[in-house]
Amino acid sequence: MELNEIRELFPYLKQGKIYFNHASIGPLPLNVKEIIERYSVERSEGTINNYKQFLLVETRARKKIAQLLNTPPQNITWSTNVGTAMSMLAQGLDWQTGDEIILNNIEFPSNVYPFLNLQSKGVKVKFVKAKNGILNLEDIEKEITERTKLISVSLVQFLSGFQIDLKSLSEICRKHGIILSVDAIQAAGNVKIDLTETNVDFLAGGTQKWLLGLQGLAYVYVGNELLEKLNPTILGWQSVANPWELLNYDLTLPDDARKFLSGTLNALGIFAFNKSLEIFLNFGLENVYSQVKNNTNFLLEKLQEIGLSPLTAGLPQCNQSAIVTFKVENATQIKEELGKKNIVVEIREGMIRVSPHFYNTRQEIERFTEELKLLLTGSGF
Ligand SMILES: Cc1ncc(COP(=O)(O)O)c(C=O)c1O
Picture 1 (cartoon, rainbow, N blue to C red):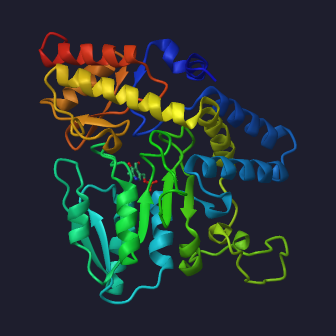
Picture 2: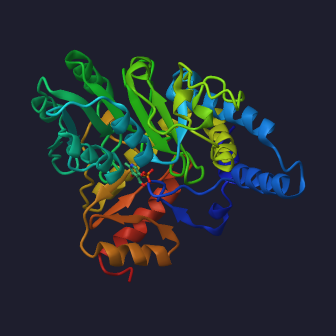
Picture 3: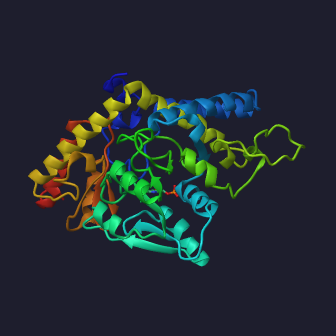
């Protein structure tokens, strides 16, 4: 698939809208919109019970997200959102009083509250301080003690767009026998994730942002070693090895990530996700990542040209992502004025966060920075 064919999947582009807010929520592409419509017709006036078809689609979607993460599909399960997935991890481990968890002070709350919730069990949660949106591996390593049991971190930070060196962090975790958990919601679909090359124990992300799916569905990866020690805490009919032996009540769990399924899944979300993932795989994952790099480089360059200092400017490319954030005076007013010009960006913590996707173009970035420049000099109001 060529880039212009991909752009045809986004009807909003024809309105001249520049949508640079994928870090909040992605637009639904046409192939996803169509499958949602077909699903509604099927469930209201077609077969109605499309469960068999759903099972095939679920298998395909699991294979596709496994391919994107470069891991076997047996290690993938589903949840509803990152908070629930992280709670599944937090509650499913065996904690002793005095055990320690390392987080940092710029994580999204979904990757914080599930672990703070363990304080009632005597678990200590430590927060590494980020500097201007950037996390230092040495600062994380300094907090490790013999009681450190888990580190949870976003691969890409929602606020600054900083991408942590996951491979190095995973090596640190291996060395100390620490479980590594990753919030991938701001990374999957814009930067490369390779779970075969990088030793991660747990990873979760929602489908609604960069992966262009619906809200209320999250993919979850559980690594082989963790599969053995993580207990499912929410059980349902789908949790067992033979779910269709309905009245057998045999609580033998499968030995793969299906043991975390609980009950009936978000079928519509999975139908949608199966379609949105096709876009990435058809365009080619390496092409997606190199488009993102080109866009990010160009955006950083243009923003610096107009005197702004994006938080990730000057960092090695491997620490950047598709999210670019910078400080300006009157951020809210500027966001609103850009909105009037059909350019959508977001405000987070008083800063402007810009998050174009791989299918966005240099022309769109140029138009955005030109309008921004006019607003900053006061002549665009
Ligand atoms: C880093 C990060 N994690 C998680 C979420 C969402 O959390 P949840 O899936 O629990 O709603 C967001 C944004 O919505 C986010 O930016």
